[in-house]
Length: 491
Image (cartoon, rainbow, N blue to C red; front, side):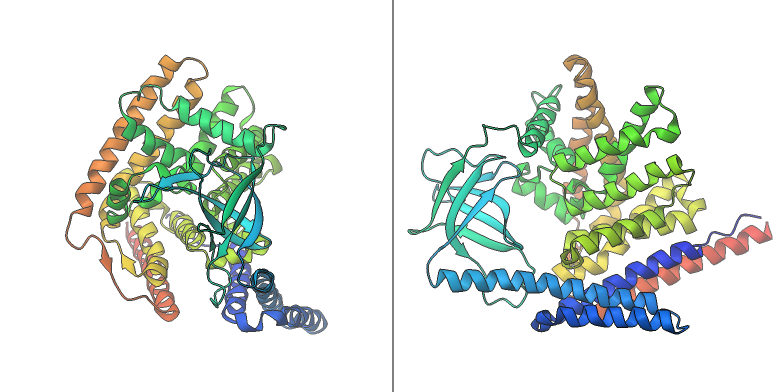
């Protein structure tokens, strides 16, 4: 008889902790007008903890965590609102002046009228902004490590949603952008990471000299340079529901982590201590691609799994997911309202739980790929419909084809970068194969995007509808496990 696949009590407690924190943060974000009352939520968390210690009450730690989550969310909203109010008062109808130090090179584009625009992310206090600046004729665009003083206008002063990223527009008669420091005096870590990314992009060019399209797509998928994709390619992948392969996430991070482990083992390091070498290299890769939330989540999970053997523990995907979720949302509560972060965590949890409960099916090469891609699509559907109002049925067709292809392309690309340190001619072979795979992915996505009904715009779902969908998905998984158990007992 096959062992009964279950989720143990420790895993259940970790998931309950994450659920309590998320519920508290969600309630806090829903009460934005009362953001100044965050100390009250913290007081309620303290009273709940004292009540739980004093009386034999069950569930008090989760209630205390919910109040802590609400306090963190309200504090985050309060900080954002304070920055907005301060800018509004100090500007008084005049453009606001802010100083930004770039983490990466600015993205440069041209308007239909021929003006050159530079775009880069930044922060004004606790407020995240997207700077869009019109560059003077003949000036060099902002580079990583440089410090720029920008004078412009911040969008959405009267928007109730203080957490969304604002646009800081540096365009018009009274706007200006001036370089304060060119970043050449010191070799900062930001400039070093940018130089590493440029070097990796250059090494990916070996074997692809006559195929710029494949090189651009490889850089977009491996290095997070999605701005290199043209509008047609982007629309084809979005229509096919396969745009997620270009977001640095679990697929890329896990492939890179396994390659680093193999390299560590090849240096005669015991497998138990392979994480000592692999974990720092993995985080270096994540920082090089810009530390997107999905990559940070995946790197956190991979680091916990790789470090577990050093402490004589078996890697546990569910506990690693829960610890990564808890740490990420305590450090930055606004991630709960970020669509990319929500999709990443929801899809990864669904895949981890599926691998635990339906391991007999996942281990089958073809059926396992179909199952995992379908579960990933189903887990991300409610978030996509609630936030963006669209359903991509093409993802059901593209997933089983594009995801394995993207995995192979990622493996070939990483091997090509590593082989280029030995010989550019040696790196040309894996890079050329990765380019061939990218052309195949582009053709498949374009074909699926043209199917009628592959991409539909629908009404946004409510929170109740999203929860009902997840309940139905959990019920379907539970039913599949029970049917398999009955078949196993009758054999």
